Amino acid sequence: MTDTANILIKGKSVEMPVITGTEHEHAIDISSLRSQSGYITLDDGYRNTGSCQSAITFIDPEKGILRYRGIPIEQFAQHSSFLETAWTLIYGELPSRAQLDAFTRGVANGSAVSPELLNILKGFPRDANPMAMISACVNGLCGQHPEALDVDYGKHFDSTAMKLIGQIKTITAAVLRHRNGQAPASSSPGETYTADFLNMMFGAGEHRAETAAALDLIFLLHADHEQNCSASTVRMVGSSHANLFTSCAAGICALWGPLHGGANVEIMEQLQEIKASGVNAKDFLEGVKAKKYRLFGFGHPIYRNYDPRARILKAAADRVLARLGVNDPLLDLAKQLESAALADDYFVSRKLYPNVDFYSGIIMRAMGIPVAMFTAMFAVGRMPGWIAQWKEVRDTKGKIYRPRQIYVGKALRDFVPIQKR
Image 1: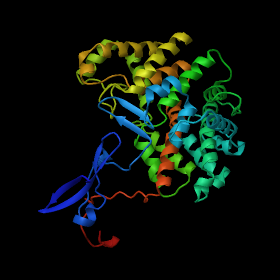
Image 2: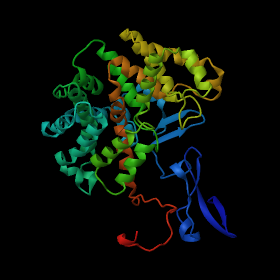
Image 3: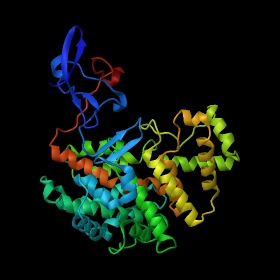
Image 4: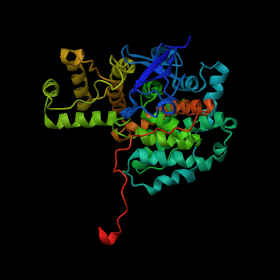
């Protein structure tokens, strides 16, 4: 027997089906609410609205659980790589050795970006926001790969997905080099994904294996995160049957905002402000408790427990910093804040633990990645998740996304000619 919910509106009972997910999440399906009652629901920010049924990522915010395709994120972090994780997100199952090898080769061979397309960067000032440049280039890939515009997208999906995962790192590296006044570097198909990315950004350097492994882990942990702002944007744009490149370019623009992908930038900017002020970590945290300061990098809008990704990156941060031997006052301050907050019941009782942005920012700064490029790194890592979300929308052949609204503007009135105003 199907569970139902009854909504009483002006004395009339409207029966709605109840949907139960794999992990026993419950939702009231209100698809027919307006046709039955004339009413819609209002949920500012969609925090209590399920926009879709998805089989990609599961989050339990109270227990601090994150799973990709049913597999705990901790197991991916321990046993997998970014590209193996990408395959799993996109196709739903762990790949065989032959599938992973073919996918890895396809991504590597598809990483080259046309020099003509990268000429777009010459039109941007060197200090322009990296996200503006990256989104412009990703959107421009439509012209370089017109087969992606085919309405029957399935014929070209595999090759398009591999090109996009490969070319996002080439574009992002070219953006960093443009900011440094350097010409783009070529991809090397023989390298691993993250080693190639680091080489294109910085050239050969010391501790490359250690830093490549840490960056690969950051990408893996950021690969998808359920129906966040950028994933929902990709799904909405994709629901119009816009191509994969354009839909993911829209996701990049959504990620740009400081309330989403720009969070780790704000963390580093805050550390710089604390350092400049001369306030020590304990006094700053006392100021936070007194509502004098706002604290970035602690707590998460979804998790009501320790962000599982943060636990993993904390250990990675300790390893990378020890390996690199970086002497950076800002990183020292970050570690002092972390230790003081984790020992303070005020923060622990409120579940204000250091989040994934806190530790990813520490690691990327130690690698020498400029703060202005932090959100761009997030875009590289999130690309497989966006692709998986776009594919799911297209495979389910759902309706075009079209939310409704409650109008609160002026009531009916007449136009007044300009000479009488």
